[in-house]
Image 1 (tube, rainbow, N blue to C red):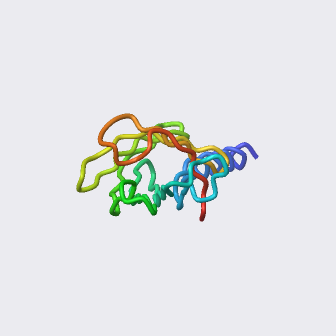
Image 2 (tube, helix red, strand yellow):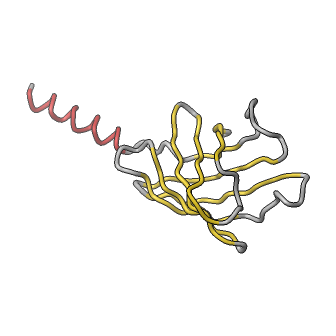
Length: 125
């Protein structure tokens, strides 16, 4: 009986470690309190502790529009926070993202003025 309980415990720990909280398409499109001058879209995939993906800003105003930007980064040990780098032909940006219940908080740490300083993203799919 003890071996069976130990086996179930190990399976539950490995299943918990495999959750990919950051995987998905995140956007400010459905944000009720956000400025509607632009839509920031982040499409990322998490594999173990690595993050890869793309980012894009869509707007009617030409000063906000960007091309597709490359996103790379890593997830911190507890899995709720990640450090990412966003690269485009106009420069690069470093940021921290936090996830909690289908919401992603994006905080820019430094770099070019490609993306907003702080925004809340909701998961589209």
